[in-house]
Image (tube, rainbow, N blue to C red; front, top):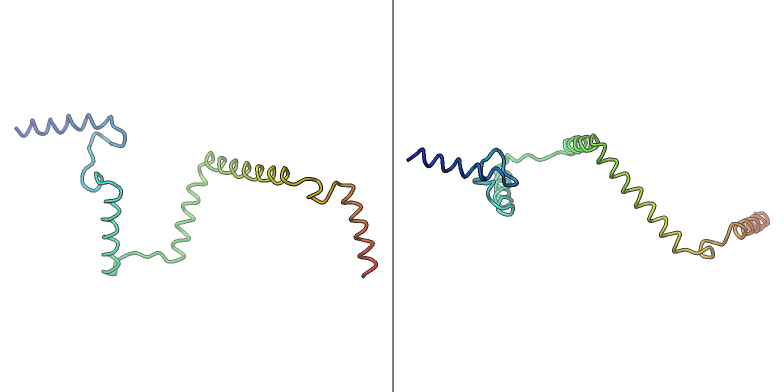
Length: 131
C-alpha cells in the first residue's frame, strides 16, 4: 500500500512538472503554497516578533549604501538593460524638446535671429549709456 501512495505522489508530481512555476516535479507546499497576502502577513508577524525580542537586524546608513552599490553594480553589468534605459531617456528628452519647440512660435521665443540681433544691439546701447 505504501508503494502505491508513493507512486501516486510521483505521478502527480510529474504532471505538475509541466506547469509554469513548478520546479523539478514537486508541488508547492506550506509557505510556498500560500498566496502572497498570507505570506506577507506571516512574515510581518515574524519581523515584529524579532523587533520585540531585540534580535532584528537594522541597516545602518553605511551598510545600506553598500547594499545599494552592489545592486547598482549588478544591474549595470547587464549592458542590454543599460542600453534600453539610455534609449528611453534619450527618447523622453527628444520628445520633450519637440513639444517645447512646437508649442512656442517665433514671436513667443523672442522673434527670429534678425530681431534678436537688433534687440541685442539696442540693449548694449542702453546698457552703455546707463553704466
